[in-house]
Picture 1 (tube, rainbow, N blue to C red):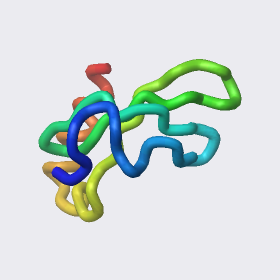
Picture 2 (cartoon, rainbow, N blue to C red):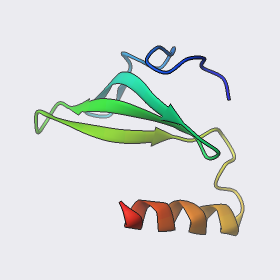
Picture 3 (cartoon, rainbow, N blue to C red):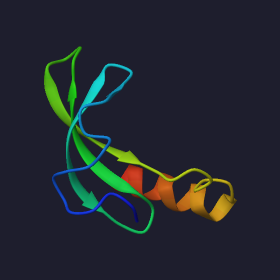
Picture 4 (cartoon, rainbow, N blue to C red):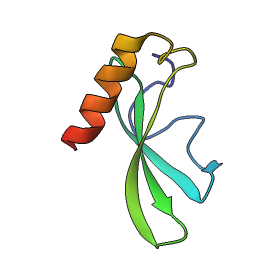
Length: 71
């Protein structure tokens, strides 16, 4: 997984819609997790960024959906 140590990453500081990525807080088998600021609601959220092609197969989509529902 590219990106290096937790806390610093090239995606930190960019905006995805109305979310600004603040810091990298984790990484795992499916992707990297960032603390982001919801600029509309003025609150922190977690955003998972997946590598391109991660959700191409149905089992990966089911795994991602199951993980999201758990949270």
